[in-house]
Every structure is written in structure tokens, then in C-alpha cells.
Length: 283
Image (cartoon, rainbow, N blue to C red):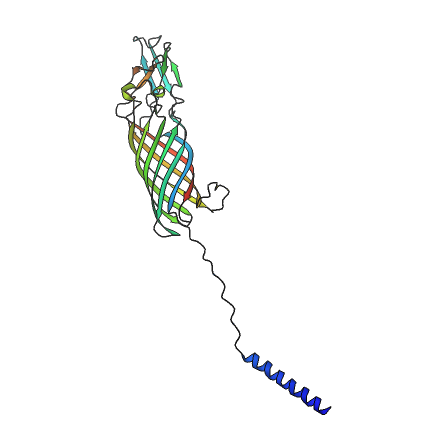
């Protein structure tokens, strides 16, 4: 019996010594946590999109809106007629599409440069013959037209550079470059002095753009980002002698029937619009 007790005591001692030795051994270190960096957004990449807005006359022309049609030349049934137009009758819807490319020098926040081209429909001219006539009556077959108007423009487009600064997903920018436009004969009255021909000029403006998260519900094309923008543009197109002072138009052939000395040389208008872009390239 004593022998068994001595053996048990010896085994207990060995076990205790083994536990103490194991406690002194170095423990295996746990693997460090895996760090996944959050991707930094960049505006670099190509994009395309659509836009819609409102365009209105932005010229510095005279605010005179009253024009006299002299009698005795077969234009009125009285000795004379006075036509009064709404002072700012040239405005309307504008909509179209754009395509472009941006390059950001430093991801996150930094300078962004780019180029953009767009093509726009214009709804100018719906009020071009809305005038109050007094002192006489316009002869049948003649149409009144505001000689200061923009009615001959059906569309315009631009090719512009862009320069801005990005605050992460927010981009503030200025823009400027080449502009062009034209109109169809049915809205520019028979091509008087070539007024339905192609014309060119310039456009300047600026805006602010914001990039939505990649998983936005608007991301139908699985692009790297969907961006929303608000933009303003001033457009100036040189008209030469186009449509200068056309007050009365022959309804049969849309040719000018009477021209006043008051007209305009340039098509000057402003556009305020909102846009949606799909960006492809770097995240």
C-alpha cells in the first residue's frame, strides 16, 4: 500500500512539473488582421450621359419690343400697324446628350481636367409671332415675327474643355470652348440671307457634379460611377446678316415680306440644365 502511495505521489509531481514547464513555453502568436484599404475615388475615366434644362435669351440688345409696319406698301389694310411683342419672348426647353473624358491628377481631392462634347435640341420660337397689333390690320397671308428673336435655332452643340477641383466625390468646374448651331427653313423663314445655315461661336460656363456610390440604383450599365450635375452655359453664335430685322413673313413661301432696321447680329442665349452621366474607368 505504501508503495502505491509513493508511486501516485511521484506521478503527481511529474504532472505538476510538466504543467509548469508548458506554462513557461512561448505561445504561438495569432495572425494579424487582414487590412483591406478603402478604394479612393477618382474622376479619371470616360463618360456619357443625358441632360435637360431651360434656355433663354441672354443678349444685351435693346428692350424695345414695339415695331411699326408702314402702310401703303401692301402689308396692312390700314395706314400703319404697330406690333408689340413680349419683351423676352425667346425661351424654351433644351435637352440632349454629352460624352467626355476626365483626368484627375491625384485621387481623392485634386485638380481635374477634361474635355466634353454635347448636342442639344432647342425649343425657341414658339412665341415668335405672338404680338398685339394696333392702328391697323396685318394683311392676309402675312405672319408677324419678332425681329429680335432666336426662332431660327433648332439645335446647338459644343466642344469644350473642363477644369475643376474635386473634393472627393464632389467636383466644381469651369468650362469653355467651341459652339455651333443651326435651324431649319420652316423656322427661319425661307433661308433669308442664309439664316438657316450653319453658324459657329463659343460657349462658357461652369457647374458642380457629384458621384453617387457604385451600387446606386441608377447604375443600369454597371459603370464605375453614376454622376449628377447642374450646369450653366452662355452661348454666343455669330449670325452675320442672318434674319436681321425680319418683321413680316409671307406664309406661302416663308420669305421675308418686310424688314425693319432693328435686328440682332449674334444669337446669345443661356442654358441652365441638369445632367446624368455614367463614368467608366478607374474607381
